[in-house]
Length: 314
Image (cartoon, rainbow, N blue to C red; front, side, top):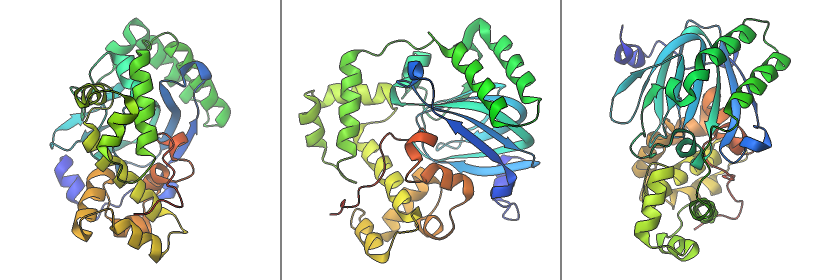
C-alpha cells in the first residue's frame, strides 16, 4: 500500500506516547545563532504515522528505518540517509517504516539559508539528499553516528552523538549579513507583539521598504511577511488551545482573531495538521511536543519566543 493508502487508513492510529523516545538539547553557543536544537528520535514501531507543524527546516540523519513525507502541494518525497528538509509553509504529513532511529537538528530562521546557501522560498516544502551540504565528511559522520546509536540508548550516548554532530557542523555556517540578521530579529519582536500584528508596523520597525523586507523574508523564511502572520497566528493559537489552563474566555478571545469558526479550523489544520477541536481535547503526543507552550522555542525549532502572552487579546 502506498503513501496515500496508508495515510487514508483510519485503522492506523497516530503515534502513541509508548511508541517513541525523544531527547532534545540546546546546541553549543557557537552554533546557537543558526541551530535551535539537536534531537534524537527512537521508535521500535513498524510504522510511524504523524504530522509535523510548519517549520524553519531540519537536517535528519536516518540511523535506522526510512520514510516518506508529503507537503502542501501533494508532492511525496522519499527520505535519504541524510535528509535535508527545507522550510515548510504548511504542516507536513509523514510515514516512517521502523524500527526508526534518527538524530537531527532544527534550524533557526537564518540557519537554513546560512547552512545551504539556498534561498528558503525556492527550496521550501522539499525533502532532498543532504549529503552535498556536508560534503566529504558526510559518510564518515553518518558511519560514526550509526556506531554510537548501536549501543544501548541513554542520555550519555545521545550526548556523544550531539557532540560529534556539533563538531562536524563547526565552520559550516556562513555568516549572515548584519543588516539582514537585525531585520529578522526585529521581525520576530513584531510578530510576538500580537496574534495579528499590522504589516505597516513592521516596515516602521525595520526601517526598510516593503520590497526589501519581502525579499529578506523569502530568502530566510520562505514566505512573505503577510503569510508569516497567518502561520504564526495559527501556531500560537494552537499552543493556547493545547494549554490545560485554556478556559472558555480564552477560546472566545482566540475566535476574534479569525473571520469565523470555519476560517479558524482551516488555518490551524493548514499549519499544524489538526483541527482546533482535536488540539483542544486530545492533541497527539508528537504534536504536543511541538506545541508545548513553555518548551516550544527549545524543542521544536518552529518559532523563537513564541509563548503566548497572557494579556494578548483583541
